[in-house]
Length: 335
Ligand SMILES: Nc1ncnc2c1ncn2[C@@H]1O[C@H](COP(=O)(O)OP(=O)(O)O)[C@@H](O)[C@H]1O
Ligand SMILES: [Mg+2]
Image (cartoon, rainbow, N blue to C red; front, side, top):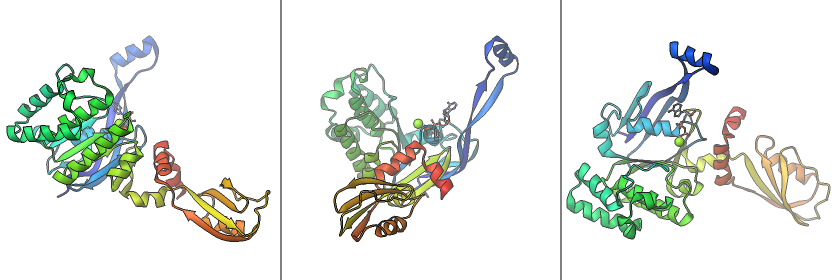
């Protein structure tokens, strides 16, 4: 049984619509007009226990809506959701015990309480066994460097401190499934590293299933073997991170070493540009949609004597950037 299963799920928001002006306001009062906004459309995927999956897509793609459906905050219009075998909406209380969720910059803790008081309350609410609680508190304090923070109210914390506190509060009841919606947004590299290490260890040690929404390439590279990409509420990719590069890497680099000097007026095919040139060395970048590596190579060999050439792997950073620019849509159409 997968830890998370989403089966042909769709979800629309109903947005009230009104024409401008007083007339519109009155009309809306008498006969409210609604518009449907499709946020998730016919979405299906499974996540096994112990996986860390990156959930990515442009702003508005439907990532947060999916997480809200999985936590039971929202109910799907159609399709079926199971988290650890439960319907998260209809079995919300049981579901809440087994999951943890962090929504980016929004805290779920009590602003005026010192962190330790928040954690003590959570321990009571979740009925965490006292000895286990002390043990976890110790461990989390070390790993997330909470030490002096324990006695500071959340209100007074910096963004990075808040996120470390938030992670402790979310994971102290040892949820089997954790949803993290942009956990590293706005944080400096050191804090990011600490948070990644923490997530990784939770996953390794306890087999915690993690679904992670992030714009951060480092998060993805360091944590996620598998990614799910959604666009306009639909799944467009589900698979290993390595295969994304091959599938979505639009730009490739090709470098030539020549035996003779490279002519100044060398002709390039459409979609090809020069990255760097020296007397006998030329690096080009080409758009896979416009030219193939062999076309680029043979066009060059027709103009200059080539001694050697190499094609580099597309780099993941540019692929992820394309994903977040929404450029994949065009590529899928072109494919
Ligand atoms: N409460 C809401 N009411 C109406 N529309 C919403 C609401 N929340 C999200 N949406 C819309 O649903 C779509 C998906 O949003 P969301 O799930 O927040 O995307 P993401 O987290 O990927 O940025 C967007 O078009 C967004 O404008
Ligand atoms: Mg979101």
